[in-house]
Figure 1: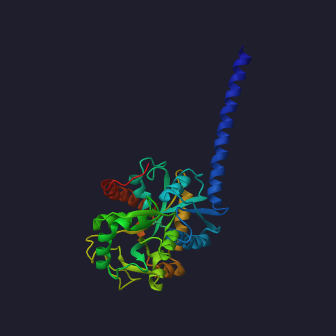
Figure 2: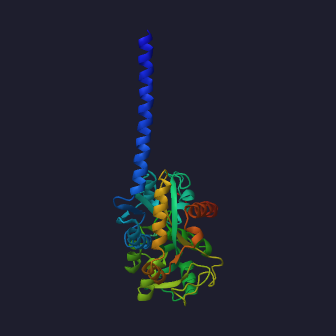
Length: 336
Ligand code: MLT
């Protein structure tokens, strides 16, 4: 009897020691993994088509983040459902710092646009940093019969039943800008969704769509090259990259303002040490002269320091969800 009890006690003691040793080994393993992070290439997931505005920002940042991190940052385009396919994918990836997401305002607007979003932007991610703020521009196909915004507004009002507006799906900023435009002008156009504004721009250049509201990171070369008609910028004030271009607000769309902000996210549970390393790499990339030059040429502004911390991104995202939710809900646009 005595021997049986002793055996049981010894067995339990051994079990407890083994469990403590296993936890210690795991903790040490995880600490080691964090210390050597990154030891292989990092995937930066872009929710829209290659060659488009988000992709341009991601590839520029990724190239220079690699310098600090010592490993390639490889852009992976995961398309679909206005960016929500990519966000869902990253929310369920291993929280080890090797799968990151870059996303824009869609991270906030999707919460109102989708009734059944399969992830929660406020609880399923670690926040790394914001990066750049990008104005949008209102464009039409080259042969559109309007040479300034007043003519554009008059033509759209009288031909709205037969006109279409390209965008990158529900959750894209092109869709958000188009929705704001329709509301401000009191018109309803046919929406034509693409997997990103890169293919939407091709359709505009080919004359298959009439109108596109898109980011300067893609549109400035087209505007300067004369391949499209251009009616104004979506910022409150004129922008340095297109100094002669009027704002939509000054041309009659009172208070019209859409600015695209970009955040970088990791799956929830990614260790803080890893988040901090990626944050440092983003900050370093945003100081690189080549990045500053390229972003300035494309009309993008480096986000202010207050937005470059994990807390800055989290606070901003929450505020954007609160800002856009009621506006979107009032419009009655949503998907399941
Ligand atoms: C893109 O990269 O294609 C755009 O950011 C899509 C959009 O949101 O309009």
